[in-house]
Every structure is written in C-alpha cells, then in structure tokens.
Image 1: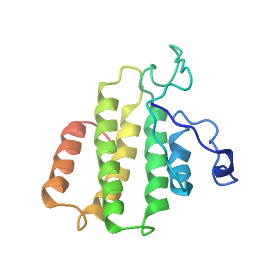
Image 2: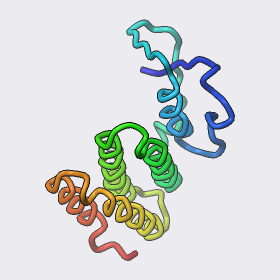
Image 3: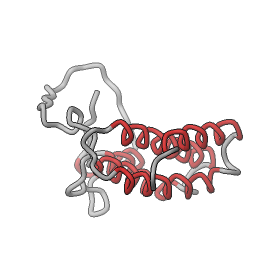
Length: 158
C-alpha cells in the first residue's frame, strides 16, 4: 500500500526534508491533516520497486533513531491541542512505543559503534515524554512503558 497526493497540498511548510532516512514521515501527517478527502482503493495503479540499498532493506542505523524521534516530536507538537486530548494521548503512546522499539533495535544492532550516545539521547527523549504522559495515559500502560524501556537500557553505560 502506498499514497498519492494532490500537488496543491504541498506548500513551503509541506515539503520533503533533505538528508532524512524516513523523509515521507516528516510530511505525511501534514498532508493528511490538510486533505479534504481521503480515498482508499485496492486497485494496482503503479509498480513500486525497492532496491537492495533502500532504507527498508538496510541495516538499522543511528540516523534512523534521530529521524524517528525528530518526526514524532514534530507530530506531537503539530497536533498537541489541535483536536482532542485523546489524539494527543495516542500520539504520546506511539512516541513512547517508538522509544522502546528504537532502544531494542539499537541494542541488537551490529553496525552502530557508540550505542551509549543513542541510549542517552533516547533516555532523555523518553523521560521527557514520559513525564507528560504520567497523568494522561492509563497507569498500567505507563508502567509497561517504563518496565520495557528500562529493561532494554539496564546495564548499559550511558
């Protein structure tokens, strides 16, 4: 599944960023938010070719951690207070989930040299959003995020 967008949705604030591994994630949320209509179809409308060097097939890199956290900071700040508290909370939950997932992938990675820098970065970002989430998400979810994240970075020198 992929997406097509009308050209008129793109403006100075909505364009693909340069030097990002996950460039589409930096604009998709804006394009969807600006859309008046979204259509889904099962029709095959184009051929999608993935090279062996694509981001989806490459090794997990430190830049993926930074890009993912940066985009979720943007998404959270873009939507915070714009619609409903429930949406804000869902984005917070997704943010925390990504922190756990990124910590797990960083720990397993064989290509990241200095993991301690990434773990420190993830810990700072995770704890900042965790503080915001403390009163907003269910206690059992909050505790699970804490347990899952700290279990991964336990015994890691930061």
